[in-house]
Image (cartoon, rainbow, N blue to C red; front, side, top):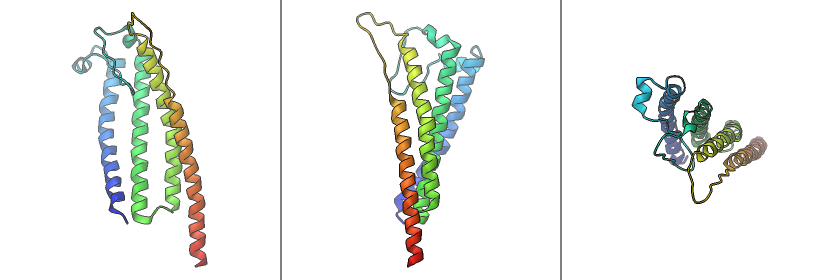
Length: 188
């Protein structure tokens, strides 16, 4: 089979392990900011600065919203969901490319991988997109805009929902194709 699938599979697996390492640090830093805000570890990280998908916010002084426990919990939930989503995405991509490299596209195992891929994108991708938009909206309220206003609307979570549904439809179509290929093999 095409060596590109093997290279892609290995690259996805390497990225999977890198994200695992980064997720441990993200988990530790978020736990530090939530439960141990005055610890030496948290002080070594600097001021709390949440991760946003679409932009970076830099404040001259720490806004009040950054000190609220609910905001920090939302940031933690958003980053945790993003990490789990990224890990599952990379793992399923690795499995899919490995299966295609070894056995081709039309296999029952690829149907299962694509179905799980679609569920992951639909559920975790949508949850991450929604939490990220809530986090971004809350942070934007801390901006001091004197000559205008800012409104933030993000429908990113709907993109993920529809993307997951498309993957589920593709998995269903692939299942039909796999049955047709197996039936064709039996008749030959």
